[in-house]
Amino acid sequence: MALYAKVMPHRTFRFNECICSPFNADFDGDEMNLHLPQTEEAKAEALVLMGTKSNLVTPRNGEMIIGATQDFLT
Image 1 (cartoon, one colour):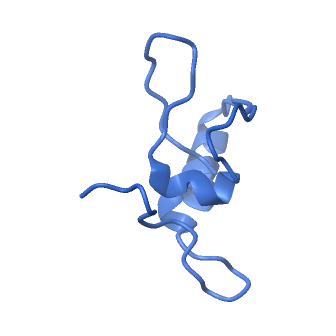
Image 2 (image 1 turned 120 degrees about the horizontal axis):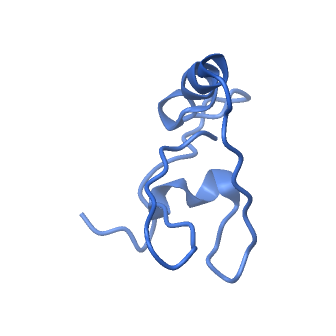
């Protein structure tokens, strides 16, 4: 899944709790890797095919995979 990066202190990944499900993240020390698209074509492809707006539902059965969670505050 392609996300916009914002450089912040402390060498950690931070993201909204709503996208934990696609990454199978549960904040218990999981490891994640960062890959950067190198060309303009790769950047465009990442946004179109792998962006969060393109991956709100599963292609298998159309269920939502990104949404509010139990700890989500509005």
